[in-house]
Length: 420
Ligand code: FAD
Figure 1 (cartoon, rainbow, N blue to C red):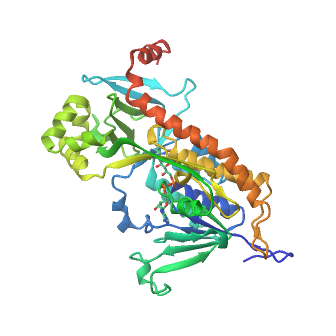
Figure 2 (cartoon, protein in one colour):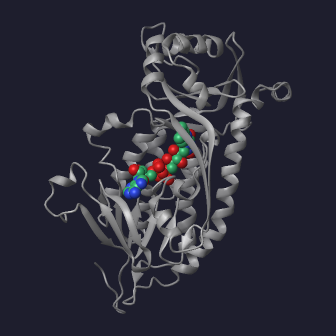
Figure 3 (cartoon, rainbow, N blue to C red):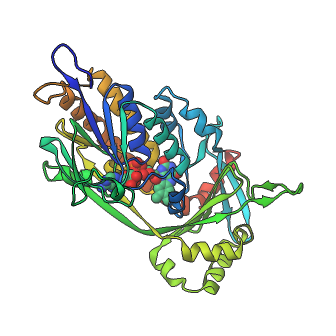
């Protein structure tokens, strides 16, 4: 631990959640000289025995300039590494009607595009980079149970399978940690957020939509040369809009597509048998059946989990200079704008820009104060809350656009005029 002439100690930030946003934030804080402790409830996802648990949890994601900018901000090779393993999506391909007619709608006249990336690979890359920094410690299988924010302490349950083997635990499997500043990057159901709400007047709103989702995989096709190839045009985000429900497909670098079926929960429940499933797909997504394969369709539909979709709005995002929430913990949104992770990454970039503007140093005084931090965090909340609320609303609107508006007569006519 370093100290300067005023007997100040190196500040310790505790980040709860080692998902995409928490892991990136750990890198940023370590780079500015803080000691970083990252607490993640899951086991280390990089261990081969834990890879299977990823099944059915949004395998790939659209990474846009908003997120890329934050990766670039680390000054590391993250952007290059992840883009090398991505598939650019320059347009959306709308699968109209039953006969499989497809219509390409470019995202941008100047060729700007989004990128399909592997969620797990991106998370692993961020964890690798974080752990390679000397001032970062990652505690896996640490579930935040409670926090005494005014006294800077966290209590975590640590009796996961791996932790149980270690002798250093207290007998009840709980451990207490002291940090100078606590960050909740622990997702939509954030425990950090609920702990903050006990101490402050945080406005909070949570809204579910009556739509669930299920992931299906579309394997590579075989090209004329006998080699694997994409079953659909790879440089598109494919959408089968059906007004109240839709199927989408994003490409993967291994020539497969990950498809996601979004529809009201009741419709999922009404499909009880394999025959009903096939009839439903023949009626609405007939061209996708040979590409997914009947057997895979049945096993994915009945075997994969059904996810729910929630919007979370909170204000403010900080509690004095004690804690802050970022990523889904602060602003979970429905996935239809492809911006949840991207916005979470941008939170990290904006937070550190504001810490720079306020000249925040990684030192804590003997009285436990990080000079200027409260003002900086208030500034962050004032800046970020309104943007977070706006993107949550845009994401909700885009559900309507993707499943319905892209098929409307006016929309298609406009696209035709634009030459799309
Ligand atoms: P999370 O990814 O939820 O990570 C939170 C972490 O905290 C997890 O590792 C969790 O294990 C850990 N944790 C939770 N509780 C505790 C606790 N008590 N103690 C310790 N650790 C804890 N976004 C995009 O930008 N583009 C897309 O294309 C896109 N597509 C999506 C598709 C679907 C179907 C869904 C559901 C979401 C999609 N998103 C997309 C949104 C994106 O997945 C989220 O915005 C992103 O994962 C948020 O990252 P996060 O790190 O804030 O939270």
